Image (cartoon, rainbow, N blue to C red; front, top):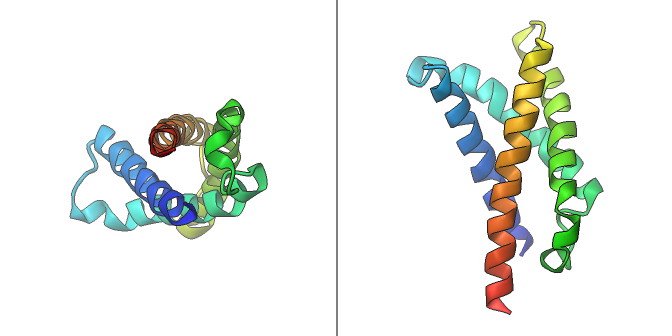
Length: 124
């Protein structure tokens, strides 16, 4: 189960990164370094924070009532990722970027994790 969540979370963060850059019409090879400067900090922050919210526990599929924790973890991870991204790029991170990254990450992770929970329920 944890392997599926890890792979799925990684793919969700990759997709969120690609959609974010595409929405700004920055979707070609020349933007790969900037995409990496967003993807890797968010990936690191997510996997550092999500376990603290119980998002990788074995009984996770039976705990849909705690689904709100995904959004909260994504918001914290986004703030941490923005800080890390600022260090990597040696630039200031506008607060609106943190809000956009947090909101889109929360929504994207909640959708992916909700799909996972539905599939886990069907397997039982």
